[in-house]
Every structure is written in structure tokens, then in C-alpha cells.
Length: 266
Ligand SMILES: NC(=O)c1ccc[n+]([C@@H]2O[C@H](COP(=O)([O-])OP(=O)(O)OC[C@H]3O[C@@H](n4cnc5c(N)ncnc54)[C@H](O)[C@@H]3O)[C@@H](O)[C@H]2O)c1
Image (cartoon, rainbow, N blue to C red; front, side, top):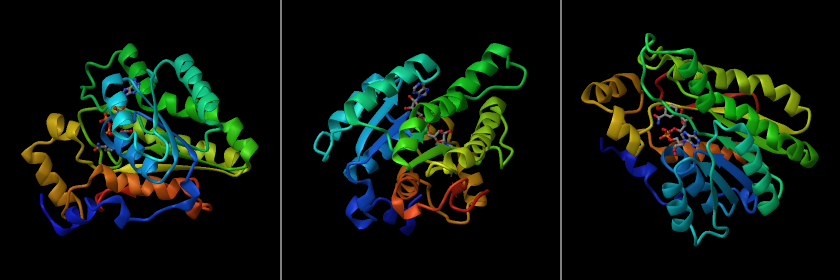
């Protein structure tokens, strides 16, 4: 799909907002090696933030860190399986030791693997929760004390419009993604007392390489055209620019919200 809106989306960083409050800020992004997460890593690094990111895909993660080596701070990559909470906690402790207290957490990793209701076993169910939502709570828990001490922090949980649209073919994913928004509201009051903000960033159908390769069909393109108000592809950078805003001090009184970036579909 080629449109003026797509042309705008692909403009270089200098055509978009700069956030002085993000310079040198320590930002942790989960699932940052590919897809939307990689765009988060790139955009925060371009703001001069000190970025750490975790992913199970070490090849892509190391390549991205090297690609961004000329940034003010080269991003720090660690291979972490986020379904292993002990490993997640240890990796977060390593980031703190290397970069200092984490001030922004972007809980991004997930897996939208398709499945039928009939094939869901208790083990599959638990694995779906573990990859899509459980690590978000434990990552928030692991950064909360430092944020409390700093009286400042921004936690951004990636949701999805899939449950709002009643999408079929992946019920455990859809359920997990609705829980993300419950998690945001469940944490916002407790943490807000300490100056920490918690928001959900809720994407529509974002045209990552994986979506194009695995899930996008002609029927899907038609559904996007019918569903979105804006007739343009939703791109990872559209989400990244909202994440920057939610992380920066510019949004200091925004918390407990679901910020939907979907071209006007849900
Ligand atoms: N792409 C979309 O259309 C879309 C739509 C709605 C919501 N979202 C949400 O946005 C976020 C990013 O989406 P995406 O499409 O870029 O996802 P993706 O599946 O393309 O990438 C997620 C990243 O997480 C990593 N990852 C997966 N399992 C992991 C594990 N166990 N440990 C560590 N890393 C792991 C992957 O390697 C990958 O780099 C997700 O939370 C997703 O649910 C995406």
C-alpha cells in the first residue's frame, strides 16, 4: 500500500520529535531483536537513551546492537528466554549493574502463534501465558524498587486490539493480550504513589516482516482496508513514536491508559 501517510511514516528521525528527557535515560526493552521491538530499540537509541534489550533470538539481537553501534550509547543486548523468570531477574540485575537503575521498561515480547481451541492443553495454555503476559509482571516487579527510589519511571506494556476485534484462531494469545491491559490498571495505582507511570500501548495490525511472511493474506489486506479509518500500512515506527512519548517526561501525568495506535480500527 503506497500512500502519503506511508511516505510520512518513513521519514528519518530528524523529522520527528526529540525528547530531551530521554537522553541518557536507561531503557529496557523486551523482545527487542526483531519486529516492533527492534524499532523501539532503534528509536530510543536515536534519542540518546542508554538502551538494553532482551530477546531469545541472539543472532538478530547482536546484529541490531552492532548496527546501532554509532549511537550515543551502543545498545546492550542479552539473550534471555523471558519464560524463564529466574533468567529474566538475573538479566535485569546485570543491566542495572552495567547501566544503572532502569527508568523505562517496555514490555514488548510476545508470540502470536496460531492455534485452535481443541489443541489447547494445560501445558500449551501455561506456555502461552508465560510468553505473552507473565514476564511483563515480573519485569515490572524487578524494576519497581529502583523506580520507587528515583520517584520516577515509565512502564509500557504492549497490548493488542485482537481481543477488541474478537479475532479468531489464537484464543490463548487474545486472552493474554486482554490481561496485559488488566495488568496495567492493576499496577498503576500502587506504582503511581511512587511517581511511576504504567500504560498499555495497543497496536493494530502492524506490518512487520514476520506479519508479512506468516500471516498477511489478500483477505487480511482487505480487512485492514475495511477496518482502518486511515488507508495506510501501520508500521513499527508508528508504535515506536508513541512509546517515546509515553517514556518521556512530556507525558508525566498520563498513566493507567490504553493508548491505541491502529489507524482507527478498534
Ligand atoms: N505485529 C502486530 O501486528 C501486532 C499487533 C498487535 C499487538 N502486537 C504486540 O506488539 C508486540 C510486538 O509485536 P511483534 O509483531 O513485533 O512481535 P514478534 O513476534 O514479531 O516479535 C517479538 C519478539 O519477541 C521475541 N521473543 C519471543 N518469545 C520470546 C521469549 N520467550 N524470550 C525472549 N524473547 C522472545 C521474538 O524473538 C521477537 O524478537 C507484541 O507484544 C505483540 O503482541 C503486535
